[in-house]
Image (cartoon, rainbow over all chains, first blue to last red; front, side, top):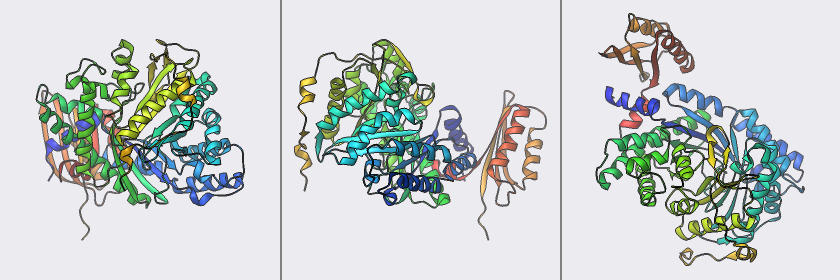
Length: 452
Length: 93
């Protein structure tokens, strides 16, 4: 029988430490919607999405009531549109993005991810159309998220795509400059993208996945922070043990919700993604965990080590709690979505270069970082290339979600609102990499990719 | 026989007359049977944990949690109902 203290501990985590199920994401394959006529394709994907996901929001809300734990977001990921729409005879995929936006609004999910292309080794005609459609698609839709995979550890880095994505990011910012360049917050460039990630903006439903799957993302940086208060000043073994135990408990809740959601919706359960995903709220921050570990500010020497042990022990605790841990699982380090990271960036404690170092050991990459609007496209491409190189060589997912804020300079500010938060515009190294980026072609796969 | 489904009801807030009675009335109306109650009052702060049988509950979780929320708002309390599975998941291997 459960005892009183356990009941109160669970409820303290939920009520005081922001433990929540961050997202229930339904992955839907659109491969069977292929059609040469783009209007028919749009009709098919709209019907499939709105049929499969019609009860998703309702079930998420019901589970939240049943267990007294918030289920914050209900979302959808779909087959990368560059693959699903490859047969369409059309020059632009903007109408497809609009259809996805309509479908998302119809079923009540707040984001739909998968306006995506996988070009790590090369482009298809469809990939080119999709990437060219991104800026307008991001400008004319509210809930559609886009991602492009430009490298893998197995295949190397497509530097033509890296070059193009620098330009696409700038153009997306330009087209949404009246709305704080919000388009760029919905666009992420990956190396080693994963096929079952439930978190936005990078979610898509990989081609190796089933027709439909339920993936659940759990979060709780506040719970980890509070747990670490109990072991203040203790050695690293004790610290790591505490992170693991906490991650275990959080994951078990996610596992239970995922299993039940998949049962009710009659959709196979995919994975649990245990990611410490901060929100701008106080008490829901990765930066606060660093401070609790003994760093004055995130960015101080020791931050990379602190993040490495955090990320690793979150995974270890999570893996023990569920047989199907997947997605990105680890610690996210977005800047604009974490009040402690925002303050550290404003003070100058946290720089872009330090963030880059941290991405070697975090679960993803450079995330939600505002940069000056006059940053050259080639510099953005250079940042993407650096990040992709880290992912490629270290066999991990890395990503870049930068927001060049048009018309604003370093030291300025941008306000996205809601979960996306706000951010200071950070300093970017002004030395050019234009000639490097202009070379084009591919960076070959690293030596350790030859494992066969 | 159908396996018994249980939930935990937690009530937190300033102590006042009739808390237990009013919560129990809502439960009785909903055909929820009380299996166990433990209650402490420390410095005027009321803290009650109830384990209840919800096998024959005649409302959904949305309705019952709304009723408890409404009662909680009236009395300045925080009242929560949760299926016991969440505690088993978190604290039992």
